[in-house]
Amino acid sequence: MESSSAAAQSVVCGESSAMNYAHQSPLAASFGSNEFGDSAGPARLYGAVVDKQLETRAAAAKLCKHRKRLNCVTVMMALLLPWVSFVVMFGIVSFYVHYAAPVTTTLAATCAWFFCAALNFSAWQTWKIGAEDRFYRLYMGIALTVATSFGWVLGDISFWQYMQPTYHIDHLATYSNVDPSSQMLWSGEQVPARGRRYQDAGKIYFSHMAVLDRSRAASFKDGNLYCVAPIINPSCNKNCGFDFWAVGINCCSDLAADFRCGDYNSTHAKSGLRQVVETWRPFFRLAVLQAEGFHGLTSRHPLFFHWVEDPVAELHSWRLSGYRDYIVAMILAFALNVLALVPVLKSARFSA
Picture 1 (tube, one colour):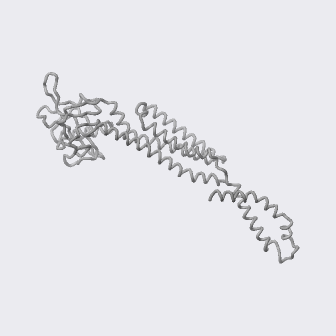
Picture 2 (spheres, rainbow, N blue to C red):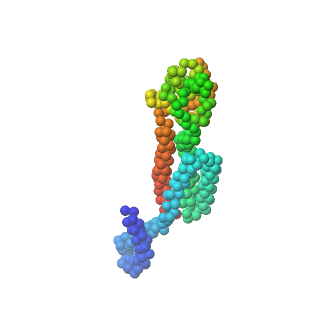
Picture 3 (cartoon, one colour):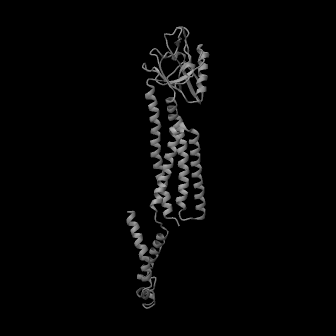
C-alpha cells in the first residue's frame, strides 16, 4: 500500500511541471480571457476545475520536496549498533572476564560509556546547526549511551547474583566425608570439628550422619531475615563443634527456632555450597551470635553453606540462570531498539 502511494506521489511530482505548461496553454488562456464574455470567467466551470487541480498538485509537489529518501546503510547502523553495544557490554561485565580482571573490565566499561557520551554531545551540536543527518546522529548518540548504560547495569546485576558465586566456588576446594561435629586427631583423640580447617572449602560433602539441627536455628533481622541452623552429627555426645551452618534469607521465623532454607526437607541432602556473598556474611555472623545466646552454643570459626542435595547440579543451575538472563536481555534490547527507531525514521523522512 505504501509503495503504491509512493509511486502515485512520484507521478504527481513528475507531472507538476507538465500541468504548469498546461496552465499556460492557449486552451487555458482562452478560458481565462474575456472572449466568451462575463458569464464564462476564470472562476467558472472548466477554469475552476483546472485551478483546483493545480492547487492539489502544488501541495503534492511540496510534499515530494520535503520527503527524503532513507539511506539503508544508515538505517541498518542505527538498528544494529546500539544493540551490539548492549550485548557486548552485558557480556563483558557479566561473565568470566569480569571475575578474572575486574579492574580492567571496569576501566573498559567506563571508557566505552564516556565514548558514547561524547558521541551524544557531538550529535547535539550537529542538531543545533541543523545538519541534514541530525536525526540519525542524535538517535545514535542517545541510543548508544542508553544501551551501554543498561548493558553495564544489568550485566553487573547478573554477574553478582549468578556468575560470580559460580566462578568463586569453582576456584575453592572440595572436601568429602566431613564430620560436622567432631574430628579424630592422629593421636586418636576426638576433638570438636573446627571451621578453620576448612577455610578454603567451596563444596563440602558431609558424612552420611549429618543433619540440620532445626531446633537450634536462629535469625537476625535487618530489612531481610538472615537465617542460620547448625549442621551436626546427632551421634556426637561430647566434644561437639558447631562451626558448620546452613544459611538462607527470608526462609525462617524471627519468633521461634525455624529453618526452611535450601533442601531442608530432603533426607538425601548431605552437602553444602559455600556462601560467598561478602555483604551477607556479617549478618549471618550476627545470627550465629543469636543462636549462641539462645541455645548455649559456641562457634569459634563459623562457616556458612547453602544446604543442597547435589552441589554440582546447583552450581550448574546458577550458571544457566545467568545465561538465561543474557539471552532474554538480548531479545528485549533488540525489540526495544526497533520500537524506538521506527518513529525516528518517520520524523527524519518527513522533516523540513
